[in-house]
Length: 258
Image (cartoon, rainbow, N blue to C red; front, side):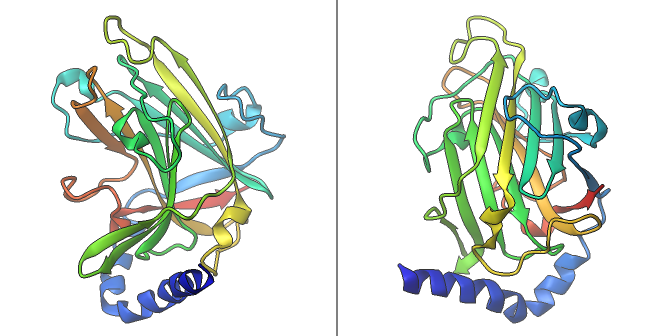
């Protein structure tokens, strides 16, 4: 296991050098979109899924308004995304309108992304590296968390699921889960992710005012009883959705501010 961790760490540092030409092209993409501002929390944040602290009202809120795989007019349901930070944690808040709440996965490292799901992908420097941290959670708070390697071997990607970080999460919802005989209102997800979670691969641009990370916020939305009719929305536009959403060269930037 120690040998495998060493290989992962070496891979993280060597890959950007080996792909220097490709990285130059990708760097041109970062910053094209408006930079997302993440305010510092001015009070303790209680993770309860309710967004009652004043700090949440004072940080930027942005819609996930890039939609993919929309089959019906009402499949493009709105999501509002916010972030905060302090010395210990990153805080995330998703507000999601949802007419049909779907959540079947209950196991860690399963497939919550096949349910209604909120996702965050983070690169701890302001660059589109081919390695990022990922957290994907459904209404059951079932988490698929991983370190993701794009083009790991012979054009194939790898999600390293041995990464099992600690974090806090709470969900609220207004409606009936897995019952499409009625119309639901929606759900929220609030997370506190310890900054210490991001030291596993070495260098981290510190969480401090003025510093920037690359990231992508994603929502998966399931709109029938089986979960087969599904749409995806993102905070920044991505390329061909038929591959996946793990396209680091289409991530945007967040900036930590006071």
